[in-house]
Image 1 (cartoon, helix red, strand yellow):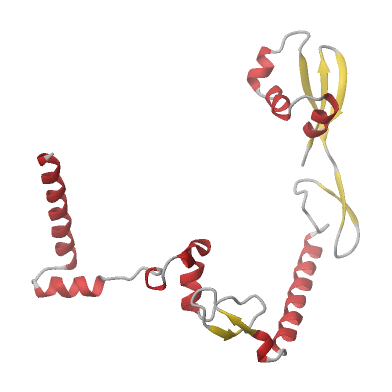
Image 2: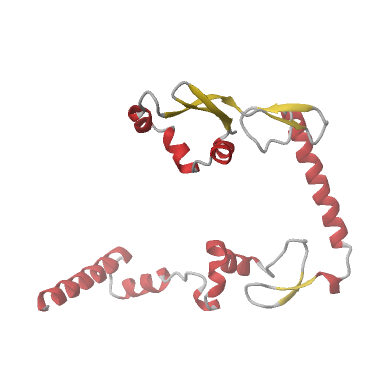
Length: 199
């Protein structure tokens, strides 16, 4: 919620409004006005310098999207509902709307529901309006890291665990998984140290 400030030069009143409005009215930079609110700027202020004084907060009056009642927004400027009851009713309305859209979509012929999977490129019949992947596997591969995995080749998209193979190697050498991994780590460290000494 935007705060309302009054700008004074010494005792003389200049203008009031939000920081953006004051920047337009006075021609001052927004960064300069923001700096005037900092503790260091207040300490440096002399008798005739410009001062910003907070005189209140901008009041937003909105209309509830469910019951149509006008209400004041105290904390959240994007608030749509006047009460918790209206919020629950609004959520139910949205849910029912999605259900109706899903029913309409499921009644469409298969030709209209055919899509191309964004991960593997396979053509599939979508069950939902927002479906982008043909399977859960493609969804986990293609959707990882906000879709960045789509740029990687399919074989490198998903991390493959080698625990079973390493465990089999350890048993063949009559060692535990941890012992074998510790030995590999020590060998790697020795190689790095030896390489550092040679340099």
